[in-house]
Image 1 (cartoon, helix red, strand yellow):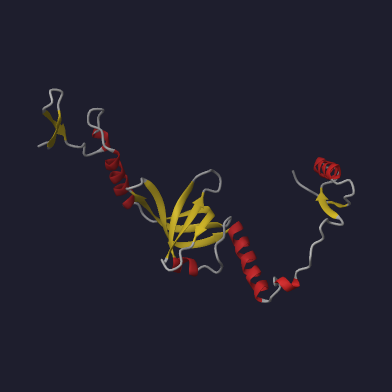
Image 2 (cartoon, rainbow, N blue to C red; image 1 turned 90 degrees about the vertical axis):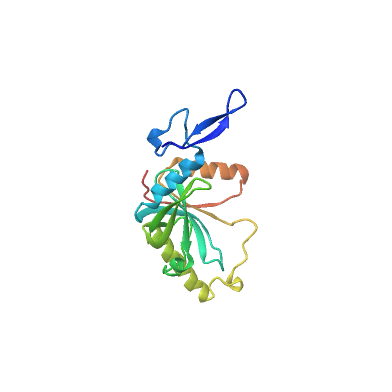
Amino acid sequence: MTQTSPEPGADGGTAPRPALAPTAAQTTPENPWPLRQLSVKVGEYVARMSPIWVEGEIVQLNRRPGSGLSFMTLRDIDVDMSFSVPVREHVLRALPVEPVPGARVVIHAKPSFWTKRGTLQLEADDIRPVGLGELLARLEQLKRVLAAEGLFAASRKQPLPFLPRVVGLICGRESAAERDVVVNARRRWPAVQFEIREVAVQG
């Protein structure tokens, strides 16, 4: 038996309101779903999905000390789309180096849908750096080692001159880029000196 609820009629009385359609295919122009119902149904569908491995690029990482939870924004490698990725602190601590923006990673995550805002996110329980991410991870590790040796200490830094004595330029042989750089620099500063090194380039 179809349940109905009263709603105002044209004569000021109340007319029965049809019950919400149980499936999306049964909605009609006269009996549509409210957005909240759609959100609930999408959330139920996403909750049945299995955990998956996905690849992306880290564009932002917000650490929240004391909360045990951080939020990462993971972007597709080739197109402009991204997902929010909540990740537990122990997952980040298990990484050999701190993840940094620009790192490419593969994550194991369970998709979840936040019904109140209608947003899809990925709850990560494993993160593995790959490709550029591995290179950036090694660079970060090297930076930490050098910093521990005191090589970045302020006392080791040499004061920079107000103007450079010589500008180094690495470019292809007889390239348009070389002419553009030299011509425009000398327009702004006629006294500038260049040390130009030509190398093999591609593209």
